[in-house]
Image (cartoon, rainbow, N blue to C red):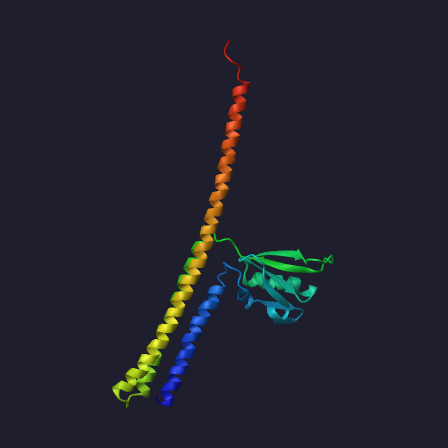
Length: 234
């Protein structure tokens, strides 16, 4: 295969792979499970300097929790600037300031970020966002595929049909691979959202059942008391 054709295919591979990677990154920022990469866009203003969050804090997933991570400021002075930076990027996070385990110093606090519950409203918002982001990635892939198909045709205008077919074949494989990866990312994200939504519904149903039981017991108790207080017939 001609070096010029190899270069075109390498260029196409890089762009198509980048669209898939970007889609995965954007899905990570539709936070259902705690994903530390969702903090990458967070910028922290310390004094007159703006820094990436990784320069001012350490992050870890909360043990035995999928919906929460802990942020350890490298200095107490960074605590509130980090909170502000997170709030600007992810206002939906529930933020708590927690005393550092084993320390009595009130300045030793960490940030605990909890992902919002996937209730009815958030389920619809997230599902719609997944569709929009997926459609955007697919459109980018198709546009790139069309562009590089034309570039190959121009580069191999004087080539045998077999050589052009081979190059187009390889480009098609790159296209299909990127499309399949994006489909899998979408399926995984939709499952993540649906699983969280079903947990919300199950917990809601359980709470309603407990409340209903308590109400029935209260009604039965009240009815029993009324019967005791009612004089019997002579």
